[in-house]
Amino acid sequence: MIGSYTLFVSLPLVFISSIILILTYLTKKEDPAHKYFNFLCITIFTWNVFHAVFSASLQAHIVEFFFIIQMLAIPYMPVALLMYVLKFSGYDKAVSSKNVIFMCILPTITVIMNFTNDFHHLFRINFAVLETAPVRIFINERGPWFWVHTAYSYIAIAAVILVVIYKMVSIARASRFRYYMILLGSSLSVFSNLFVVFVAPNSPIDSTLWGATFGLFFLYFAMDTSPTSNYILARNQVFDAIGEYIFVLNTKNAITDINRPARNWLSKLGINSDPSTLDMLLELLQEKGATIENDEVAGSGELFFLDEENSLFSSYAIKNNPFYDKKQAVVGNIVTFSDMTAIRETFRSLQAISTIDELTGTYNRRGYAKMLADYKKAGLLPLCIIMGDVNGLKQVNDTLGHSLGDYVLRCAAQILVECAGEQGVVARIGGDEFVVVVPSLDEPAAEELICNIKKAFVSRSDEMHGAGIALGYAIRTEESQELSNIIDEADKRMYQDKRNDRRRRDSSA
Image (tube, rainbow, N blue to C red; front, side, top):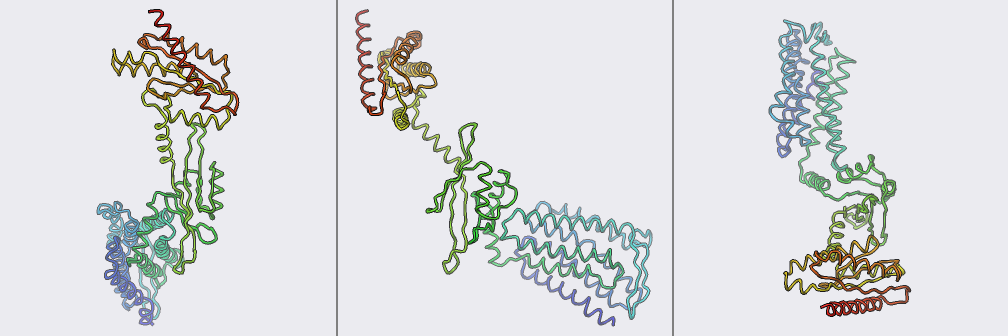
């Protein structure tokens, strides 16, 4: 009966753990966690060998000896498992030599307690072999230090499970299978140990060993280093490294995978659970204030988040790309949200720069033309256009230098902007030519504005170094009037004012 027990209970575990140890050495050398898994394999294999001898022994003192000597390996198993999972998950700093030594301190104390128990009885209060055949009967009363070690082991395994769950949440679904295997292998060890400690503490069959050995089997298959798995691993790393927000859909528009940037994006928006379908995703985004424009024919669209405080917006380009199987049948879609905010802001800045006069900060001719087109499209009536030409700028340039001439132009632009107020828009359309466009300004108000501009130039004559300005205006009051005719009329009046100003200076001289 004892031989049968050994053959069908202990030896299969020795065989399984030895095969896994050999296969790991031969096939898993490429895995970064290889040496830590070897440490775990050696620990469980050694435990199996000692337990097999313990199970096969017929003499009480040999049974007791091998029961005690099993504790050379058992205390280090949770540490080996934790170190393996940390290394497997990429936490290299956590498995430094110092940390490994630190984690092994308490298990080493347990080993010492085990072998010196006869002097203090802290690990086992009582151990006695009552019968070896035909039925193995023994008494094992655990001491206080056993429970300290047990708590430490459970903490280590709990840390393993937490690391696995954290990694599973933070990685793409397609790469979670390996962590499912680790979770299953770790759980087997925990549940089998709970059974031994709290249900059948004196059972001749150590179910913890069965759980640990078969758990090792699942952990082995988690370390897949085949070319295919390396490709999948690389694919998953790229999938999570891409800056775009990627959602993988099946043919029913159900979301089957989300990359890490997309999940972080949703979390920032306050969407903390994965949407199950594309429609649900779009609804959640709209609830968060998004405006969505779709082009169903092109399979693209755009999403905006308006910012009312500064009139800016976040913009995302939406692209829907189908993917196919080997028979070129559509098996799903990849929907990407590309953040276009920075690009659009850069484009707006460049657009603004292209419409602004560098010297004066007013609109240039391009900005002036765009502004008139916008006003015409909006149908703003009446629309007053004031043409201006700085008098005496050539004399300033010839006598005082072009840098001072530039200063005069800046002063002239500043005066025009101040006089035009918030409603008016000023543009420099030539070397010394300016235009002021003011919507909703009738003829009396236009004449008053020109008078104010003239007075402002006179009051700042020192800054202007004697330069003045000639002005002429025209008002568009009906949509049938061509803007070009209004501009020509204002231009003629400006030149008339320029001639009048020249006559006044000549007569005063």
